[in-house]
Length: 202
Image 1 (spheres, rainbow, N blue to C red):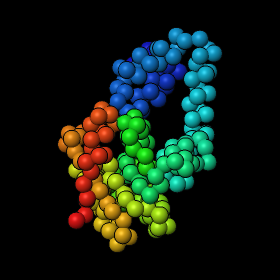
Image 2 (image 1 turned 90 degrees about the vertical axis):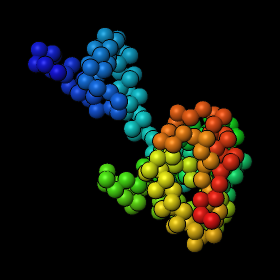
Image 3 (image 1 turned 120 degrees about the vertical axis):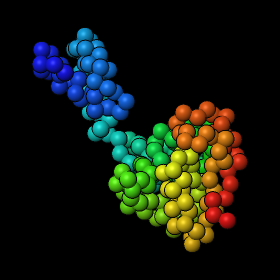
């Protein structure tokens, strides 16, 4: 921002500009909006940010985000804990739960293998997945990574790791568009992708 803006406003806009998908013009608009709101409303916004950062952590079982000891899905005895759906991010769990049809549990990798971006397997939550499966109660692992180069590479890498462990490894059937993401897929498409999943390793 140009130097004729108040410094606190510049600093606020710079923080907003760090958010994904927010350019400097949008960041400036957000900064002006915050300045225009009552002090109590701004305080509530700041408190919500700090509380989210303070209270939310990875579920020790599935690595999804939760403020509880175990996330509600892992803690639910009615879910099928013998079926694990592997996804890239917590947003994908939300998308699949919208279908209302999947009754298993999840594992969140928090990223995909992408050597060009410096993301190697050891930087993802793969060890935690292997640990869950080695306990012996898992029968099927569904690879629900997005249909992109990185998503496919991650699914195949994991499938090869899991093959010696004797679990069935399947991949979502892609009525999902190639290059698309689970987050933006509609419920019917996701349901059909789940229903028509196919073995990843023959």
